[in-house]
Amino acid sequence: MENYCEDIKRLTAHELAMGNLASSLFQGLVRFTNKSLVKNLIVITLCIMFVFVQIYFPYDYYTSAARNRSSTFQVGIDYVYENDNITQIYGQVAQIYDLGFKVIRIDLVCNPLDNNDISNQETDMFFNATGHFGIAVALVIPNYEPIDTINYYLNRWGRDLKYVQIMNEPETSSGWDVGALYTDDEIISDFNNIYATVASYNLSVQYYTNFGIGYVLRSNIPVEFSQKLNFVGLDIYMNSFLVLSPLFIQNLQEITHKNVVITEFGMSTTDSAAQTNYIISGLNLFKSMGLKGCWIVYWNSVNNNYGIRGTPTGTAIGDWIVQNAK
Amino acid sequence: MTGLYKTLSDNKVFNHFRNLRLAEKLFIQGLTVVIILIVIQAWLNGVQQSLMNYLPPIGLVISLLITYFVQPLILGATNIALINSLHKTKGWQVGIWLNGIFLLLTFTTVNLILRVTFNLSFLPSIAIIDLVLSLPFGCIARFSNGGWNKPID
Image (cartoon, rainbow over all chains, first blue to last red; front, side, top):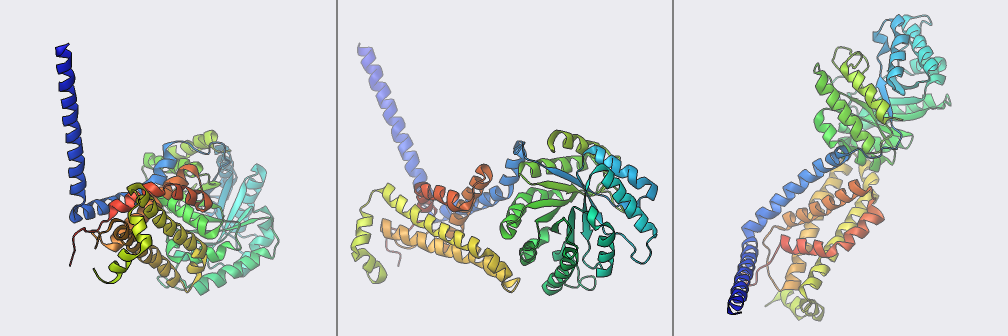
């Protein structure tokens, strides 16, 4: 019994000593952190940590697990058919269709001066193929396209279009010469001219304009344009901007009040593994974020290494579409 | 004891606040800071489009100036004023802007995590959660700055 009492006393004394130690440690910590220099350092360190959290958290969250599994997601591809032989075009569209792409994005290519010009024949061939396979077509109207050319194109192929892109990354383009500022007035008046031209055809198309990351410096342009658009496009290149893309997408949605579709997404590299990894991680990210779609650049390489045609990247994207896109 | 400090010390309301328990003081501090943050954030969200369209890029610069300079100054000044009033201290340990930007970053980081994780909108969902988090926010605000008990001049 005496031993037991001794043990209890020893234990209580031990607990008391530990309690005092914890208390004095805590008070010491409070005194230490209450010093002005230490507090400033802690606040600055936490500020830096918060900045990193804000940069990386959205990307990590969306890529850490597959979310929005049941949402519909449309994968598209940019096809520069004018760089292929006319006899190839039909087969290429068939291949694109087989991989599961739902949209093909093309540049406005035609010759209004000669109905039978080779470029018009290629465009005819392209629309024959997309009509046969039921693939939607997104037409890019470049910033300085003459109105006569647009009229010719829409008269001839307008009914085959599903999406019309009015201007291309206007916020970062040059004005009348390389390096000249494309002023807001120029951009907005050009946009209005092209929009009015397309709208006069009463086509059952959706309008959009794509913006690069540079839109953050000229946010008034997407805000102004969005009033006439069905959705806005965002172009993502480079890993750094892929990591930051959730922030840009959310910001673009907030200022335009429109859905965002990734209208250009790709990597120019000869390293197929890096290209595959980049594109697949992007597709996972955009689907997890609940976006409506992502259009990849390009099907065929033109003076660069973006093309996924006949590469392991193309096959990997096809597999991804089968598993993830509806 | 002279000037504003003496006026505040003689004020019955401030004396009442000083006699509150620590948790109550922290809650009042947190609530005040969170309300200021919510009001400024909601106002900025409301005028964002107008600011972007105002004489570009001047509107963007004004927006950035308000968000990252004026807002932290308001927050930092309010926070140290609350600390000095509620805890009978003078002066400050952390600069007003730094203290304000810290509170702003804490607030926006919490909001970002809530928005991304639960897909919530700022008004009213996230704002309500922020109000519920007033007490922890008060602890952070109290920790992030402090005055001195002794006379500083």
